[in-house]
Amino acid sequence: MPVLALAACTPSDGPDAEEAATEPETATQSETATEPEVRQGEVHEPAEASTVLGGTSPAAVATSTSQSLFASAPVVVLAGEEDLAGQLRGASAAVALGAPLLLTGDDAGLAAEIGRLGAEWVLAVGAAELPAGGAGVAPDDGASGAGEDEDEDDAAGSASGGPVLVRAPQSDDALAEMLGMNAGGVTSADTGTEITHVAALEPGAFTPLTPGAAAEPATTGGEDTAADAAEAETSTGGTTGAGSESASPDSETGTLPPTEPAEALAGVAVLTSGEAAQVAAVATARSAGAQVEVVPGGDPRATSETVQAIAALEAEHVVALGDAFGDAEAVAWRTATAATGVELPGGGQLVFPGKRYVALYGTPSTTALGVLGEQDVPATVQRAAEHAAPYAELTQDTVVPAMEIIATVAAGQAGPDGNYSNELAVEDLRPLVEAAGEAGQYVVLDLQPGRASFVDQAAIYADLLALPHVGLALDPEWNLGPDEVHMVKIGSATSEEVNEVVDWLADFTRERNLPQKMLVLHQFQVRMIQEVSEVDLSRSELAVLVHADGQGGQPAKQGTWATLHANAPDIEWWGWKNFYDEDLPMLTPEQTMRVEPMPHFISYQ
Image (spheres, rainbow, N blue to C red):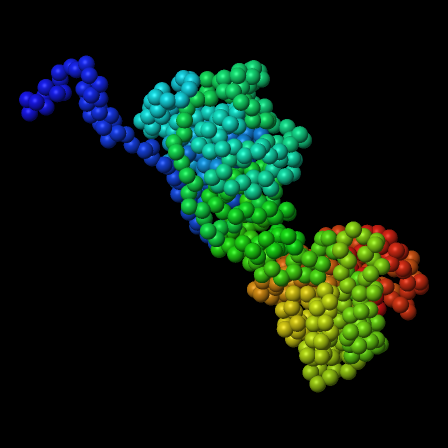
């Protein structure tokens, strides 16, 4: 012991003695030094299999998305609700960190969400500020540079019970350094493409996004904004992130803890309508590792691209952003339909818009009821394609060859079942129906029910209606009352009878995850569909089309067309029939496409 005491305390002029004196101190420092803790948030699956996050503001949707996907987050990124440039820059930082991106605009909601997440740091982009006192913020004290002062600020913020506010540097390089990673090349997001660029961001990688020339960021920084930006650039060095709102240089201090993105969510898809107002919500989804799909218009069945994208996702949970998607129930069944990947002739899973149909009308059992029955199956398919071909040059819409097959034919005799309607056997119709489908043609099964009900007859053809390319038509002209017979007066149908079919066919379609089906209502007199304004058009499993069947001279046909339109202003889709023998004269394809409004479905009888 005396020797050890002497060695530690007695000075020495030799190098060996100096080394001996300093080595114990170095060892002590090594033992006490610790690696900084790497912080990581925690994600969770949405509570329901299908969720719609609506809201009246971008801030509300951003907060709801964070609540739906994140259980906790040590760091959140904050941008201004009206600052698109700041949101794009914030999205880049948030996805790189694997952190939620929240927006100003709802002080109470913002404070509550930061508290729920347990966030200890808030990375503020542009001029974004936390609500005063709302989240117990310990603001930065203005000291510049990194090191012990910032550590003390961090400690002070944590000790106060609120998050530390860290201002994002204006320089991309400086922000990348703060995030602990390299900056990728700056990507310019032109107006209308912002969501696409945000959806392409990858967690753990910093890709700076900036608005394109057409996007003007909001300015909320006050009169000194420009001067502050210039001073901030001078103080931080490097190139300024284009388009983002400036912050005063004394705010551009502070550090973030080492972080890594949370474990990516598996089996979660987030659908966005593509509106720029959803930038923050989409960024949060990508931060959580969710797959994002842009669905213009809010219906995943609408295009071939969205159908195939949804089918490839194999999602167990779907979160839809915005009211365009409807309610959660609608999102659930529409997404389930899209997930089948089955498409209609012409692409996608919606009958309209973007398509026009040209059809042969008749029945395979006779040549007397239309051109469809004048040839065998292969020749009928070929003739349908030939009828449609001239129309392709007359419209920008996709022209789909089609057939309208009379499946139940009005009869002059009651028949064994007493209903004055002859029902063709399913197996007799199947060869033509399947051949049409294989050729990319749409099929409509027409019902002339006599004394039977439309629904009862439709059910006979359930096996054919279960095919994705097969729709249904109702022909009220041949709909009889209990004591009526054909050819005494023109038949009619009530809106209640039509709506019975609407409900049956819509439920049938939804339950089988089938693409949207066309429901055609034939009419050439107003009285044929009673209370047409009360026909249910709300079931998006169906596209309801009124088909004008008038024949004869063109002035009379045009008059019928105009009268039917005036009587049913809510009907969006309309059909026109060209009769080979009865029209005087029959219109050419060019003349048919000049009918106003232009027909969506054109049949030849």
